[in-house]
Image (tube, rainbow, N blue to C red; front, side):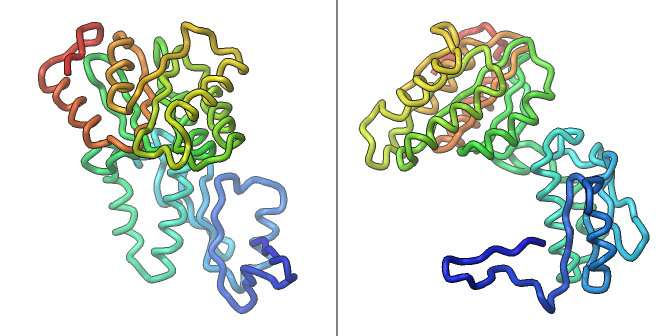
Length: 276
């Protein structure tokens, strides 16, 4: 486990005298097994993803705990950030002596619906359109959810994108660059009136649009909306059966979920008017 130093040279995260839990999504990386063996006397084990399985390695033995296919929130292994979260939860729970089987049972039943995990990788089918709704709001989070979106079959892909005003220009452009990795057919750029945070209206969407155009997005690929709910309505109006809408929703999640629920309950189909 690496340590860092402050500006005064003092070590932060000093692990001397502590027991260590190791986590890895790539335990085959050079040096990992050797480091585990070298520190075996003071480690509590390694919680790893290995060949699609979540395993516990300790003292020369390995125990298979679950397969990613048994954990709905991993999307068959595509949501690697969620696998990393699961490894950390297992390690922490084990450290405070939570029963392993109880933790695994919870992970097996943790799904992706708004009722189970609201606003976090919620996958819905509405009128023949796949909708992946998530709170991702920075380049790292966007990259993580794109790992899920890119593994979902789709005829076309739309991305809903916006950012709060208290980010630097470079951070806002970084978000656009991360989002463009999906190669979306359309991007709806939303204003966030509740999160202007010192910037004038329109400035953040303009920065996002400028960066997307610099990356190659044309007129047909970009739309603007004055608010989050309006942006979702635009996305639904554009969609057709077989499309994927990646909706990064921040301030109006409940209103968006309510709209989607009404459309599903009313039998809405892609290509029909969305209504109000």
